[in-house]
Length: 357
Image 1 (spheres, rainbow, N blue to C red):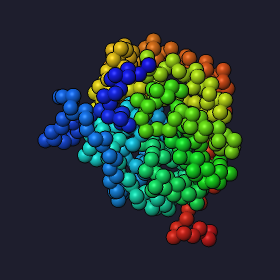
Image 2 (image 1 turned 135 degrees about the vertical axis):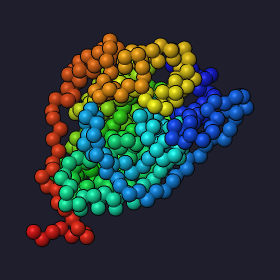
Image 3 (image 1 turned 180 degrees about the horizontal axis):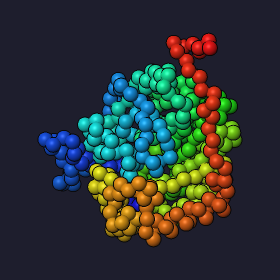
C-alpha cells in the first residue's frame, strides 16, 4: 500500500519531487531538497510548453537491445510524470532538469510533420518502421490540442511507411480512423504500456497517465477493430509491481493483446537520485528492500549500461522475473505470432504529387 502520510506531502500530480542539478550546467544553483515543512505549502507548478522549430525528427537507434531501428518524438519531456522514465536524462540536453522540469516544461516540436514529410521525400530513405514514443509519449496531454501525432500518422499513411506506437494514454483512440487506414496496408502496430492494475500505485508512480482500466480499453478497442496490438509490462520494479505481472498479462490477453514485452527497471544518470527520493517518500517501509533488489538485478548497481543486461537484468531476481514472464505468456497465448510489417508499398511523394514513373 501507499504510505498515505508520506504521499500527503507530495507535490500532487507530479512524479519527481525535486529538480536535481543538470550535469551540463556547471554554474547552476538549485534547491534539491526542501528545508522546512512550510516549503511544501506551495502552489502546484503549472506545465509550461516551449514551442521549438527543430532541425531533425527521425533518429537512428543504434542500441542493439531496444527492438527499434528508427524513432520520432514530437515532444521532449513528458507530462505523464512516470517516476522511472529513462527519458528524463535526455531533458538535460535541452538545458532543463531531469526532475520536475522533465514533466512540467514540455518542448513541443511544432514543425515535426514538415520534418517527417521531408525525411520521407529523401531519395536515400529505405522504408522501415518508425517508432513514435521511442523516448517520450506521443499521446501526452498536449497532443489533444496540438494534434502533431495525428499529422505524423497521416503522413505515414500518405507515404505508406510503417509506424509503431507505444503509449500510456487513451487518447490514441481519437485517431482510430487513421489507424484503421494504416492497418489496411499492414502499416501499424500499437502497444500500450501497462505496469500494474493497482490504481493507487499508478497515481503515485505514473501520476498523469490514463487509468489502467482505460489502457485495457484501448487494447480491447484496437483488437475489436482488427488493429494489431500488444502491451509492454514495463518497467518491472522488484518489490513494487513485479508480483502484478500475472494479472496484467492475463487482463491484456483477455482484452485482445497478441504480444507482450517487459523490462526490468534501471536508473541511469539523474534518475537514480530522483527515484531514490520518491521511493523513500512513497514506500518508506520497504524502500531499502526495493532498492537493494533493483541493485541485485544489475550486479550491485542501479546505473546499468550493459547491452542486453540493462533491459532484462541478471541475477536471481531477474531470472525469476524472466521465467515467470515466459510461463505467463505461454499460458495466456501471447507472442505466438511474429510481427511482420509492410515496407513494400512505400511511395515517395514530392510537392504533394506521386512520381509519374
